[in-house]
Image (cartoon, rainbow, N blue to C red; front, side):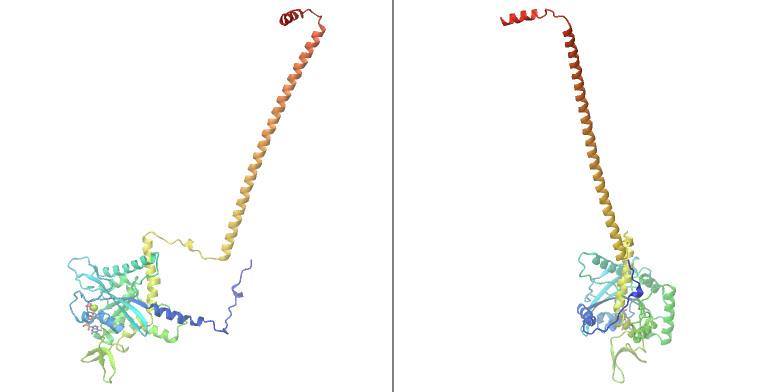
Length: 439
Ligand SMILES: Nc1nc2c(ncn2[C@@H]2O[C@H](COP(=O)(O)OP(=O)(O)OP(=O)(O)O)[C@@H](O)[C@H]2O)c(=O)[nH]1
Ligand SMILES: [Mg+2]
């Protein structure tokens, strides 16, 4: 059989003369995605009053988290807020501690006809106890539970409507202390970094000077590296040659700003030149949210929404969830048998089929032979039996004849003897009796 050498295969690149239509595929894809809409689930975690709600509203330029929640200083539960996932009450272990609750708020937003459903998951009470050693637990439980319900939905017979409630991005708000990470920061990040796309950010960065921020960033990155914590990084921007220069440069810039030092505000301020900006006004000046010279908010938004939303979701689904899933199944005692998933080789398959066919044929032949053999031997036995029969009969007849011959011989001799003897009146009594009888 001839094997095809790869050097023999020629790829012919041709410009098509007529229009086939597959140039329209991206448009089809676009239409389909727009019709279906997008969704994004963000977990925003950090100690209280670090500006989580404000930043979320700034990111989507909408009041996703109601304003009165931001302005009120007490953290009492708010009845007016609609929590789609309901309130899961998870309690921390120690009595007297502040409970860490999980809250989820969803909003459907639209931009240029494209729909996005955002869900924001927060954990009020996180870091507020005297002993916070366990306050990451309800958060990790929530992440796991979302993976579990996805796994459960995926395993159902009808899988057409699997809703993706998994956490796609985990924003961790670091307090702008200017020192380094605290044990609570390290503990929570270590607990979640293998389950979510972790994006650490320095909250309320307007409270630090430019130099303080640079120092703080360096120390945070060192701590993160030292602790072996994995943070989200856009994947293949370096190896992907198809990306244009500008995109590559932009991605590099985004990465160079890790961990983003952000400022949140939905308030609009009119500058001296009459332009209106979102920002925070201080006696000494104005901090603009969307000004890249002032803070890294724009880069965070690019990472989360504009450039890498799909990558965040992809990584969640293909790496983080897959790891979780296989670990979970392993714990349940189910392991994948890789021999079942052998690569498909048509030649090997053909050979295998041929061998199977040959084996089948020779088996049939052997069976036929055996049957034939059996029949022959049966016939032979039958013949042998009838031969023996014949022989026996022949012998019997021969014996009979010999006996008869012998008998006749004896009679002959007797008769001959009688002939030789003199005649005796021995017929008298016979006549008498006959006479008597006739009378
Ligand atoms: N200086 C400064 N203040 C901010 C910033 N973002 C929010 N704030 C203020 O900080 C306070 C708390 O903001 P929230 O957005 O409610 O903070 P939070 O983290 O959601 O708070 P809880 O939900 O109570 O945990 C509010 O008074 C905000 O105006 C910021 O970037 N810089
Ligand atoms: Mg809040």
